[in-house]
Length: 295
Ligand code: NAD
Image (cartoon, rainbow, N blue to C red; front, side, top):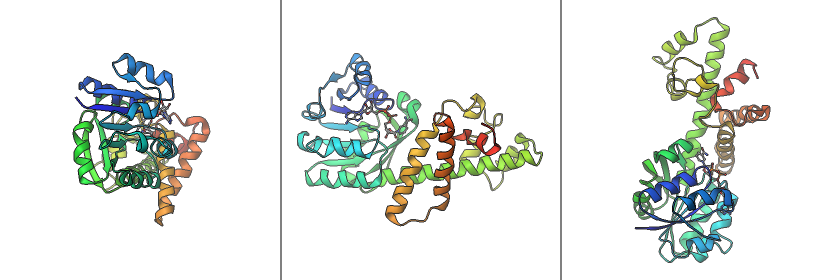
């Protein structure tokens, strides 16, 4: 039985930690919110009163926090890197900016810890079902140590490269997804204006060179793909607010690395506009309604 400290047990961290308990691991949890912490304690986790209290005897530490500033604050600033058990493996599964991930990597290495950035895709459904995809950045050694732990919470565990590579892979993928979704929506809106039947247009594009995941798996119009959020008024799925967060991270990274991403920038603007219309909680494919001019 591995002793795992879990810091940040909200919508994602809560079910992830529950899957570790189900796999008979020993979990000590900490969260600033008692509301987030209590259900996990009810499921068998030990409750810690501070971050440092949670990590002091743990063999593995997993963090699942909102943003880079929270991750920096729990690892640096007399946090986990000072209080963690010697030789512990540290894994950050939050989605954060690449620069913060690399800063924590460097500090962890200096303090003698193996550290992995391991953001996820799969959402709360994947967290509950234990089917998350983990994109990992760090040394071969850290990845090898983390794999058996991550396998208890996910189905696809990929080593993307060195420090920060997991975060980099995640924002590149989500930037492409946002761009391809907007393109797919525009094609359907144009087709509608030209009098085309959406099902016919789907049948043609899905077997032609416009084929992509946003079209064939996550179709933004109701009908052709019964499981897509379009069939339930764009509820559930991947919230616009989370897509916008990832797009903003991609633009910060592009600026920092000197990459030119004009379509990524445009996608960030369009999703900001959509979120500002009070649609932040709507699935990101719902942006088709804004493109049609419908609120
Ligand atoms: P959440 O807000 O539900 O959970 C975050 C938790 O961290 C909260 O319970 C909060 O109290 C806690 N927290 C904040 N600062 C803390 C600190 N200093 N010490 C201890 N606890 C602290 O968010 P979430 O939806 O679970 O997302 C977590 C991360 O996962 C984010 O980076 C998000 O982008 C990423 N993510 C979320 C989804 C999703 O569908 N929700 C999907 C993929 C990735």
